[in-house]
Image 1: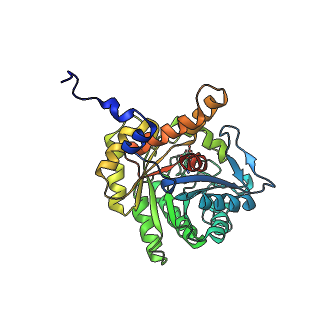
Image 2 (image 1 turned 180 degrees about the horizontal axis):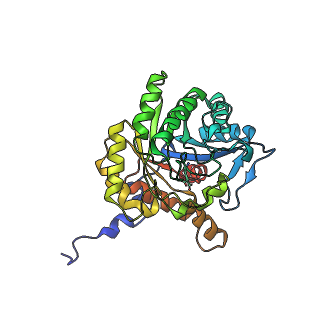
Image 3 (image 1 turned 120 degrees about the vertical axis):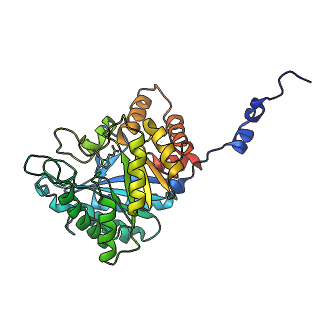
Length: 326
Ligand code: PBG
């Protein structure tokens, strides 16, 4: 008998064997494409820090949504980019039926119906002139409970516009329960909540700020989590689950796989992870320079996020991945 009894390499000998024994499989149906829709554009506008990603017009977003359906993706996550003149201290355009995001939800729902899952970003940051995710108190802090009141209105307006899920991303305490109550009271008991539960104050959101024309000066560290904290990620996730979230999310993804794995382990509901703008942009930029292989790196990153426990991945590469996974 050979001295080496175990030969793990036997399971790596051909692509077919490797495919047979892969522990993790990524399928297009678990991918969500984040999409930006901007007011006042004549044609789609490229976002320089997110190569391959654009701000859509009301026209082009319908076509993008149709591509999401054709590719068999799990969903489309919509973000609105208002005209600068429509921003104010209260983020009024976020909960007006005429706000850019609500009009986009309506257009996308009219285009694709129930063929994919339409997810609305429920947060004020794109709509406030100060750029914070909530409204400010007298001393310039973000007022938790007053902000949650506005999230209730925003979520209901998004459900009215046709969102299948609302996705509160502002990290206010109690936001999930408050939104659940508001949706139920307004007759939207079937509208789901995908909660940004463990959301960290991350430098990797950089390109997103360009994507949405953010007005923020300063940071979000008084409401988003400290990257140093793992246990707290579990607390945030379990609170959201308790408050009625239908899907939990961890964000960012790749540098937070430990948090993701723990949340996925403890959760009784599906768990999503968001490969954020900076994670995508780093790969895209290095690939543009020929330093790494775009397809291989994006595929690997997504596979590892799923391996860590994500049932669902939000990624700017969702359409490409669906193509590559064929
Ligand atoms: C807040 C929101 C942000 C992102 C998603 N929702 C920005 C932030 O919290 O500063 C970031 C997503 C990304 O970087 O791709 N509405």
